[in-house]
Amino acid sequence: MRLKHIDRIRGIAILCMIQVHTAAIIPPEGITVGHPVAFISASIGGMAAPIFITISGWGIYRSAKRRKESSDGTKSWVSWILPRVFILTFCQLLVNISLNLERGGRFFWMTPGVLTLLAIGSIFGPTLVKLSQKGKISFLIIFLLIPTIMGDLNGSNLNWIERVSSVGIFEWIERLVINGTYPAIPWLAFIVLGSLIEDYGSNLDEVDVKIKIGLLIIIASMVYSLYEEIPWALTEGEAVLTFFPANSMFLFTSGIFVIILFRILQGNEILGGKPAGRHKLSWLEPAGRLSLTIYVLHFVVLGFVAYSMQNSPRLEIYLAFFTTITHTVIWIPLAILHEKYIPKFSFEEILRKFN
Image (tube, rainbow, N blue to C red; front, top):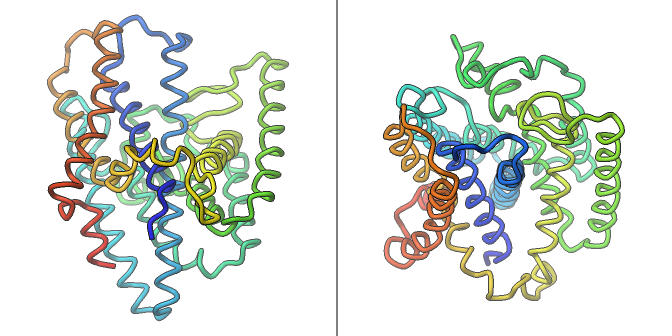
């Protein structure tokens, strides 16, 4: 049986992704980094990927557990991994081609991204199911600390074009693993986090203790930011939290807020009751069940927008805001209609058939 709060979290994740990607393609005129609108957009963007990857990690882990229970042989695992890697990589290529830099977009055709990260997460799936809970926690801590240990090797000196481009296979692997947009090291931390959320299950008291400790550390980081007079969070640059590249404090902070989101939305469902909001939030579920397909399709739409807006002036703030919100919320009714009329036509369905 599907858990409603999981589909709702997936729905929130994909809608946040759409919002931040749309805002990046059609940034409004006169909005600076310090503007409240920019701060809100950056906050949503900062949480979109961690939520999306964590919920995907949760799904990968659950599926891998079922596969281990049914058959734990090498052939069985290969037949589980390969279709996922192929489909996710194919979807990443579609995204890159749709929003290609040569047509006003953001990527080159070969740029590794979120979906190639999920492909690596799928390869990591069999290892996750064989690890104890302590083993997973150890992996999570390692991934959290790696950005601090790596220093400049994580690509802190790269600009956007350098981060999404690569010359030759070795540099492409470098972008995929350590210094691209969503490199496996350290972003696999969220795949591991998803598996731990599943492992903890109904052990809510222990989860709540970890949330409280995490919030205290986050508050301490804010105090440190004020004391040192440096920004607390920036997309890139000198700050306590940075997204490009993802530093240790960003991974920790976003991970805590992802856990809080899970904790709030699950309500009592994990104990056999109802999720938070009962039926009031059910409108999020169809988008959550279609998140991979929506992820690809919204980039196709944005690709057309980016191409048509090349060399055009930025939109006025109200028009840009309206366009961004419209493009975000339109996927909710589209997902509902899809589920009603063509539910078998999606990348999710292809993955199901392979499984």
